[in-house]
Image (cartoon, rainbow, N blue to C red; front, side):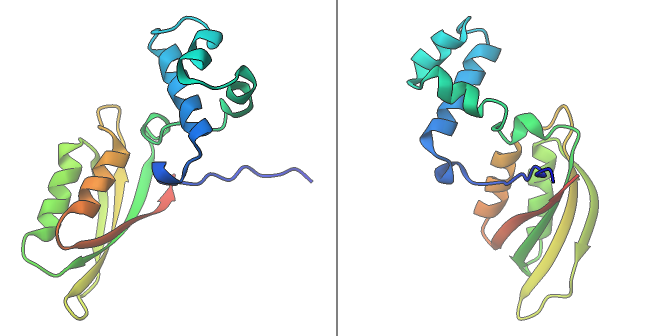
Length: 147
């Protein structure tokens, strides 16, 4: 029986250093700052075998998400203008909002789900989510699904 591929979204701080260096080596190659794999691995301080072992299995979130739809779940304070602020962050990153569903607030906290389409013009999605999480009144943001 074949093993199905599973994908995970993790924060950078949880990713082993070798995997981050593989991503950096790939970026150096793509930007043509280096011309060979050997130059790239030397620049970031990993072995060629580490590069080849992981190169097809790790990507920056934004680089692999264009044209995708993400469903995000939030819990946020029930305050006038807070939802507008969150939607403005999405607009600032040039993502497209497909659906919005907000529950009736309980104890001053509303649950919200958004479906967001990432376009060619969309900025760094991971940074967009960080900005939403950092906004006062937003308790958390989770990626529920990616299509």
